[in-house]
Amino acid sequence: GIALALAGSGAHVMLNGLGDADGALDRAGRAAQAGGRGARVRYHGADMSRPAEIEDMVRSCEREFGALDILVNNAGIQHVANVEDFPPERWDAIIAINLSSAFHAMRLALPGMKHRGWGRVVNIASAHGLVASAGKSAYVAAKHGLVGLTKAAALECAASGVTVNAICPGWVLTPLVQQQVDARAARDGVDDAEAKRRLLAEKQPSLRFTTPEQLAELALFLCSSAADNVLGVAWGVDGGWTAQ
Image 1 (cartoon, helix red, strand yellow):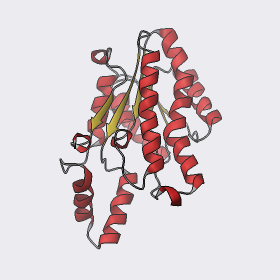
Image 2 (image 1 turned 60 degrees about the horizontal axis):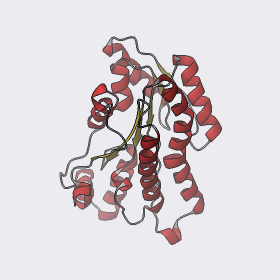
Image 3 (image 1 turned 135 degrees about the vertical axis):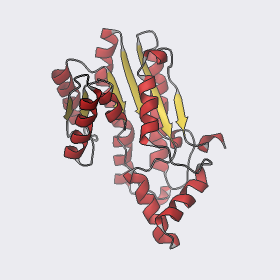
Image 4 (image 1 turned 180 degrees about the vertical axis):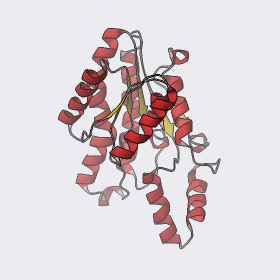
């Protein structure tokens, strides 16, 4: 959603992700074409757990487009287990991808942004960056860390023309969340619709999923001049989850 919105608004976009690269390129390319502002879209297959590959992606973006002005950190994986049962390798992977990847991308992108006197960093955290749930220690730790990283970097950039903010969604019907819906349906012996209702009822008082389009509109706002003085915010889009 965010990549499509940025491409449609005229921003050149360097994509990265674990899913269908060709499909993502096609959708973003069509959004760029529909926007009619000449935006170009490329894809880089960096493994976000590897700092050297993140650096190659950032440098490739700078070579392709001339500069990196907007950075959206949205890499994430999940594993559910109690602390004493949590596989150490899964912990390390979640911290690397959900938290450290954002640090590495930011440390590489921020010098150019500061030099040019303008830039936007939008970190996609989570309601779990503000509150916790049992069984999700690594994810909660990473997302709390991402909110903290956002605040510290925002203070460091405060007078530079660069803003750093976090978006904290509640349940969004991503493939990651659909896996949890499927697991609940199998566990409870209910259909997909009922599994979704039960999932939402536990945390999200609105009983509605946040949509990628809603997150994209917020990201566009944070990238606009209207948000020049929005710094270090962890912006909840969670249907009331963290208001409880």
